[in-house]
Every structure is written in structure tokens, then in C-alpha cells.
Length: 228
Image 1: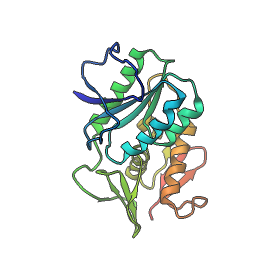
Image 2: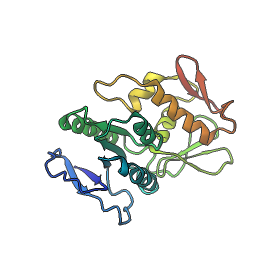
Image 3: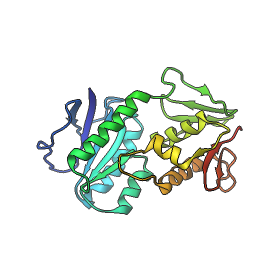
Image 4: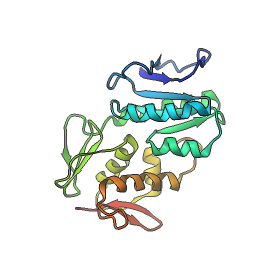
């Protein structure tokens, strides 16, 4: 059974949606504090431009208290808005171009993969990577490099770094990153989405983003995590 929280900022009536049987669905009161790690998935319902700012603000708040998957269901067709949500670290955005049945299956597939993988290194606070002085903390999605303070990452950033971490010293291709993190039935790999996450990762962990020493680019192939 998956615990799914629905986040709305209007008078939307979602009673007609046939939620999957394995979902335990509840509507979240955004005026009340969100309890830590209560949900497996939070689904934000966006129906108007006026709700976008509130959704973005709540996404930022949510990242501090939960490791749940975050998805946005939007009835608007705005590529720029979808990019904003992605930059905030949501795991996916579904639109009305898909039928409700299709995107519910997509979300359930993501929950299944998330459940199977679990949270990396849940039992240990910090684990030393095979990449020298890089240490990851799966409990709160943070990374330490050398003597630096722990750096908080979004879930997507942490998942990508963990993938590179597990393959330290080896090239991880764009396609491998896409398949591991974002693969959706019927959707082709998206180089922009991969490079965007790498950009945000580098901006947090590299001393000089123009001359990265931790995450190296292998032209036309992908990335690899260097030993630091």
C-alpha cells in the first residue's frame, strides 16, 4: 500500500478520480505542518496560473521534511512552468495530454521502482564512496566532500550523484542516467533534463563550475565521478 498525499490550492474536486487500489490517498491541509516522511508520493494539482507560485513555495518547504516522490499534475500547457518545477527537483510532471489512467500507471510504476530501490544507505548516516573523500547520506540526501560541510541535495540530484558514485571512475552515459532516474513508458531520453540536473549538482559541489573536478564530462557520452 502506498501513502499518497494530494496537494491542492483551490476548490478542485478530485472525488471522481479512480485512484489505484494500492494507493491510500489523503488530501493535505497546506495550512498545517507536514509530518516528516508520512507519504510515499505527493501529487500537486495545478489548475491555474495563480496557483504556480504557491505550488513552488510548498515544493521548497516539502523538500526539507520528506523524501517522498514529488509529482505535479498540471492542466496547463506551459513548457516554461514545467521547467521551473523540474529545476525545483520534482520527480515528474504529468499533463492532460495523457489520460488519467495512463499517468496513474506511470506514477504507480515509479512508486514500485522507488519501493524496490529504497532509500540508499538508510541505516548509515554517512558512507564513504569509492571516490575518495566523497561521502553520501541517504537519510537526508546530503553529500560531504573532504572537509566541507554537508550539502543538501534535492532527491533527483541525490539520485544522480548516487548513480555516479556507484560507478566512480567509469563513464555513465546520458541514456543510463535517464533510464535510472526518469525512464517513463513511451518517452524518449531527454538530454536537456540530464544536463540540467548535472548543472545544478555542480553548482552545489564544485569549487569552480567552469572547471569541474568532481563530475567530469565525457563529450558526447555522459559523465563520470572523479576520485577527489
